[in-house]
Image (cartoon, rainbow, N blue to C red; front, side):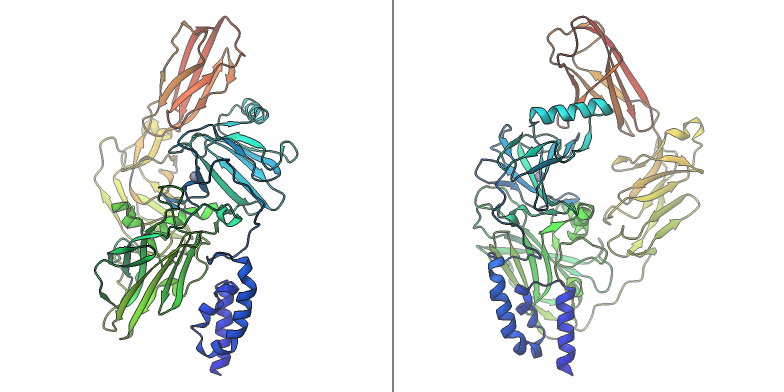
Length: 604
Ligand SMILES: [Zn+2]
């Protein structure tokens, strides 16, 4: 009977956790009766799967090897790794270093066709997508130039649609490429902190982004991850929040072997979560990158794994549920939690027991082990000795506000405000706290303290605020502002100003009736510009932000490009303006439709 039950549980465990054959023996440890019978079978399965897994890293799928080349001719070196922790997102690709300069040829990594072209103010700046015949799409971001044919295709699209930012689907067959073809020039465009090539490999069908190093595009690396600290969270049956009692302990060690700086047996009781502070370097650069995988074991049994194999873009905000977000906001400390919040649906947790939360409820001694790997398989580990304690713990605190359930629609309503949080937007249940603060100068409502900024949210939620002061003729200029970060936009609707917010915090109504400011840099009325390369402007807005800009010469729309780093808006002369007298017009609008127009005659 015991045998049958255990067999059933074991297979349920294996299938639920999506465990690969390689991991079966590890899991057999928790099923002692089965172990003897299945040990031989497991060994055979392992031997047959070894060839698929040259590196002992956690991986659910295998990827084509020896098809793709590196996109640059430079020795491969990375300034950023796949899945690396970034503010509000996991890094979606590899950042290849380019010797701190732009201008290196970027090669197609394999045969295929250009399937998408993108021009953004921020983000990748300029990006190129190549779809390959074997089910994957490669992406090249922050590039400085395309091939002349592709550049003309983009420009024609921009003129036809009268837009600067463009996301252009390209039909198959228009731009075929072969492996090795130069498809672009490396750059530093968009929201890039320095010259490099941002490179991705995506699953063409699902658009999930996949770790490029799993395709054999490896980076020389024999340096194991560096563990800097660990975190212990006394959850005790409560949702995780900024109030969760926590301790951070410093760590010492090197070359893969780490221990607590102050060696001790930890006395723990009740539901406990663990976290780790860890970075990784490779042999080719001095940059601190992210790790590949994290495993937590209790007495030799895996209770939690994390691995940056692949993820969907609409899940990337879940990084704020993965890290200790309150600690990050208060002290910029990146603690990677080894327990999973119930509403965190990102696919980076191949297996876990009880979401990684360990209930210490006996009087025994236990061993908690962290195992951290980089994508090359270099491993670091740390063992904690724990004395479990039955005397306390697991008494949930009663909510002091309104209980929000992470998997339900939640509403907070009073006569001045409505807040609606949809299912899936919270990662854990929340003791939602609301209060009112005095009105601020220039405000049209009291300040509504909507919980606090420490709760991570997956998506925007709705706020409706009733004005406390008549909006009069300014109803269509009303916005909601976050007291710390500024306008989140909004519309007046049925007696409320309504907007979508991405964080909790202090919110109130303001009026934006001030138009944007245009500052011409090299043109005034009557300017002589016979040899000017471009006409340049700066523009700014006080509150709701710039929504659109339109440049015209002699009444005809012209392409104006807005550079993210310099914030300069420019029209570049392109042999299409004949010598003589012309009129330049620039119209800039903010999000509340306040408009500024600049006009100047100039001679070319
Ligand atoms: Zn990048």
